[in-house]
Length: 429
Image (tube, rainbow, N blue to C red; front, side):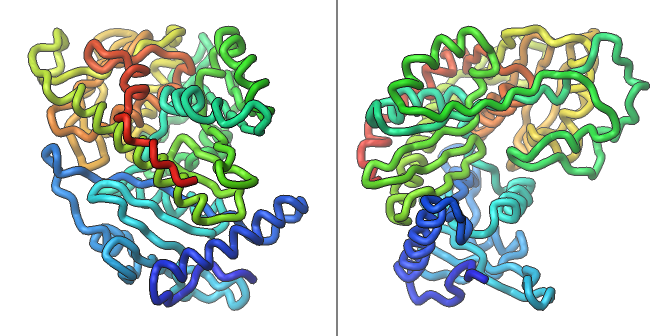
C-alpha cells in the first residue's frame, strides 16, 4: 500500500521531495509497462478575481466549507485532509490526500496522487459548489497551444492529441418527448464526471448518434503535416480535448485535459509543477483578455434579453435537428449539468428559446438566446471570463464539434491566441 501524501510535512519542500520520489517510481513503472503507483496529477481551479465585482474568499475558508481539514504549511501552500476509507480495515479515517497551492486570489493548483477515478470525483464535487470552477481549456485554446508551443518542441519528439465529441443530445428525427421518461430539470441524479463514459447518461435505451473519440499519437512532425487536412475533412477533429506536452528538460510528458487536469508522466515533480505554472500563466492571461473584451462595451444588443452587455456568439457549423434541440433544452438546465447553468427556457418557437438565468459559478446572471443554429450569451460587467470558456468547451464537446465564436466583434480564436507576451516566456519545464 503506497502513501497518498506526507501527513505532517514541515514545509512545502518536503512535499516536493515526496512527489519527486513518487514521480520517479511512476515513470519506472510506465517504462516497464507495470505501473507501481498512481501518477501525480494537478487540477487547476478557478475562484473569483477582485478586479471585477467579485469578492474573493480565503482558500482555507473555501475548502473547509467543502469538508476539508486544512493545515497551512506556508502563506500559499496547504494540506487538505478528508475522511477516506482505509483499504485494509475498511474504516473511515482522516488522511491528507493532496496539497493546494494558491497562485493568486483567483487560481489554485491541487496536487494529488490519489487514484484517477477518486481524484476526479473529489474535484468534480468541489466545482459543483458556487465558489470553484475548473480552468476550462477550450478546444480553440488547446489548438493555439498546439500551434504555438507543442508543435515546435521538435519534429522527432512524440506528442498526442485527443479529440472527443459525444452528441449526447442527438435524437432521431421521429423522436417525441413521450419516448423517454424525463428526469426533469431539477433532477438530483448526477451526470458522469469529466471524461467518463456517457453511456450511463441514457442507460434505459440506445440510439444511434455521433460519438467520436480519436487519439493521434505520433511524432510531432507527422501530426503537424496531417492535422489541418484531417480537421477540414472530419468536423469532430475540431473538438480537441487533451494535449500532451513533451518535457523540455528530460524524458516523458505532461498531459493537459480540457477541464484543467495536468497528469505528470515524467520522473520529476519540479518539471511538472513548472509546466502547471506555465499553463496557469497562459490561462490567466487569456481569461484577463477575455474580460477586457467583454466588460468595457455596453449598449443595446438587439436581443430581447433585458440585459445589456457584450455577447458571446457561438454559431454551429451544422444545424441541430428539432428533436436534438428539444432534448438539449430539456437537459441543459437540470440542477447538476455539464454547462453549470441555471434557468427556465422560454419557448419562442420550435427551435428558439430565451433563458433568463444564472451561472452557478458565483451565481452571476446570464441571459441566453439559443436556437438550432447558434447560441448568444449576454453576461454583465464583472462576469467571470471563465464562463465564456466553459460554454465554448462544452458546446464543442457535447453539441456541435465545429463552431465559430465571437465575443462582440472579436473572433474567439483571436482572443485565445493573443495572451500577453510575458505569459509563457519563463517556462521552467
